Image (cartoon, rainbow, N blue to C red; front, side, top):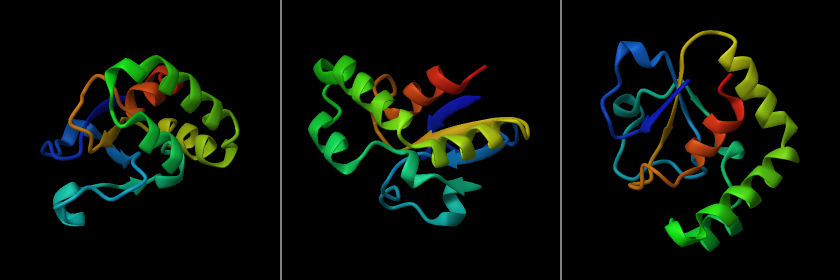
Amino acid sequence: MKIKRVYEAAQIEDGKRILVDRLWPRGLTKEKAQVGLWLKDIAPSTDLRKWFGHEPAKWNEFRKRYIEELKNNEKQTSILKEQLKTGMVTLVYAAKDKEHNEAIVLKELFDT
């Protein structure tokens, strides 16, 4: 499993690109994004996303709260687990911060 910004050009080695954001990325067409699956319901809740606001100082608490949300989101986590069995998967996200985003948490939890 890899992660990258959805705005980065898709490459053959990405395999299936799965968008893990609740909102569609601004200014990006579906053709340009080349997303094979949009798991918007695996993304952090709107309340958690707004609270976090991509503030690095809140990262550890965000991570903890997001993991708790994922524990109660069996349907979406099961879909992701099934996708990981099919070959290379790249989780794509829109955030500018490459070190503090939901894709990092998902990779930590599901990359085997």
